[in-house]
Image 1 (cartoon, rainbow, N blue to C red):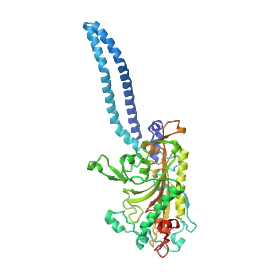
Image 2: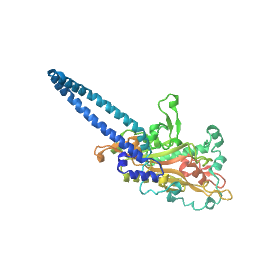
Image 3: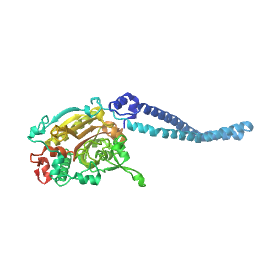
Length: 467
């Protein structure tokens, strides 16, 4: 959620931010509702002040009037009695007026809050302007000396690559047919060394982030209330991507949602809390099962493990002080951690600066990391794919957008005792089984066997080769 005061002071910044992100929101209507609400609140405060003044004066005033009434007669007495009755009724009348204004505020709030939740965080000025992911900008690439992504896989290795689908079928690592029988399209069952490799990369990534980089190991629920999805910025825009558990239809008080990332639970931990500045930054890591409907992806990547409804992910989250330079520094640190992990696996990758149209509502900036996958890209006349970089990680800088929605604040020496909204960042450490695609395809041998990356062998009982 954006700062409404800041929106009032500089509406053009937020209008331009929404335009650059290609997000439609009626900011003029929001400001109109906000002005109406503040006018009603000003009137209400004036009436409350009047109510307090009268309540303070009513005793002595009535005492004076009653004394005069005893001495008066005729029309004078009637006039004084009417004045006394009007004075007695004033607090009740003011209370009714204040209540009527409460009703006006209540009527204004739903539309105001709905619009406020739709206003995106403006992108940082150094984020390139673009309409979609097609206009993202490559920042840098990395590859081991043994592989040059500028050449085909065959030119690098001397043989045409097989896809992860073919390789996993060959070695009994996956069962798509039975998975579809169980759960429909975009489902899979990992078997044998497929499941072992899946667990190996998750354990390696989790140990990597917690042991080597000292993020706090944390488990979080993957089924949460709607307010947690709203608070972390995934709703309202992402409703169509989430699976809903309709408890209200069975008499419950809340519906629940399956989370698409461990970020939701990690950020929700400190909702409505005031943190001690001395405890910041908080560095959390979790491994959780994630669920995404992939709405709008009909016909895209329906085969294999790239675009699926359920997966497991090691996620890192940082909650830090409200300082742009510190947020930027942690953003680079988180990206560096993932680069270090991918280099330890010897997987070629590139960093993409996401353009404004690919950021989404909650991000001031986002860097995607894409691994090289031999089975992706265009297919030549002989049916061999060219290979291509495809997204495996995404690192986001959100400033106070989530923390403002979650009412997550801190105070300490630098705040002078005042409470300030925290900043937050998040990044994928490893998401499997998608990460299995480059691991399997990049480590295949001409005979179809798969070399297990050295870093993963301790988690595979020392296994060096599959097949």
